[in-house]
Image (cartoon, rainbow, N blue to C red; front, side, top):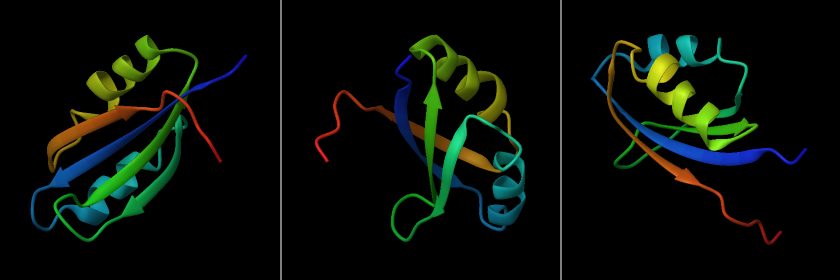
Length: 81
């Protein structure tokens, strides 16, 4: 079964970076957590069985993490390389 891939960029409150990263590390569906420079502080790579699982993951596990201000998620339609 092919997994659905998604990427989310996350904006954090000042001073919450390590706390949020530690919370995200506990979520098995996250394949990568990257610290960014720019408008967003973190980017996560998600792999799940379907869109509903990705939605539930974001709404129930990621969004409630203290220190997160904004999440913007992108679903991968097709990979070329």
